[in-house]
Image (cartoon, rainbow, N blue to C red; front, side):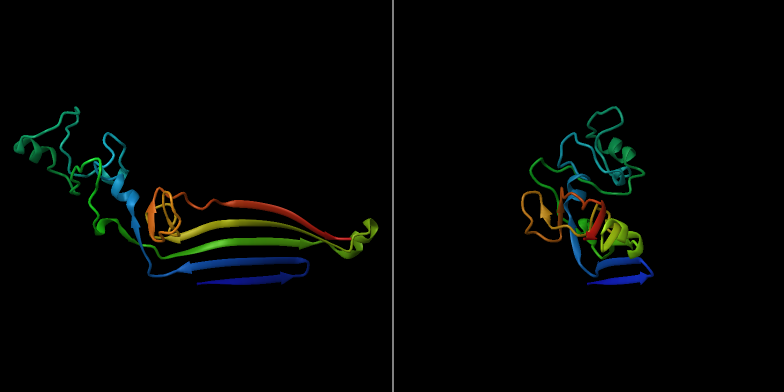
Amino acid sequence: GGFNQSFTYKNWDLNVFVNFQVGNDILNANKLEFTSGYTANGNLLATMNGRWRNVNDQGVVVTDPTELAALNANATLWSPLTSNSSFFVNSYAIEDGSFLRINNITLGYTLPSDLLKKFKINRMRLYATVNNLAVITNYSGYDPEVNTRRSTGTTPGVDYSAYPRSRAFIFGLNFTL
């Protein structure tokens, strides 16, 4: 859903467009890939600092059960090392994708006509627009409005290496002679 609101006061105008979505689920595949052994020797997300691990601080693989128990005494997340060709899909990666986005705001000022007559201009308006100003969401990824799985845009609700929407600042001038 969404709403658009316009305000005017004297020569000023303000337009605000906000959109929202409630109740959609997102498969955060980034969370799966970058919190498992899927990418061998790759970096993991910081949320995995308390994970179960089988490599000690010296970089040595630990196989002894007693050493593994000591190494993981304070582990808060079970994170199995998977092969380089798969990772476990589980509810850990399903997140609420509800959001409220301030999609764009435009502030404009129309110059007084008596000032413009000297230049034979009937109307002149200066404006500034900000697109994608802010998003309020509990989604841990970059953007809850994902629809990509790297190579296709036909997978809504799947976030797998998706770029977030950019923020744009636009300045303009409209005039009528």
